[in-house]
Image (cartoon, rainbow, N blue to C red):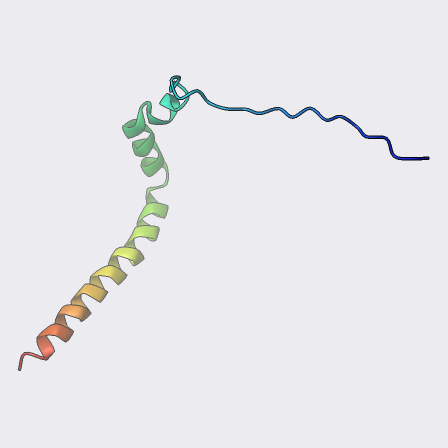
Length: 72
């Protein structure tokens, strides 16, 4: 009951640098895709972006006030 070596075949997939038609589907109709996603999920978009933009605005305002505080 000895172990017998098993030959395995390896398959290697590669893309040719000269054939770049593979990624064209990603960029085709990109503005329409973005508009469709936003129009379907506009409430989720607002709920995601509002806190991010609000936090960023507050941080900028706080930083500006902190800079102005040292002037006087």
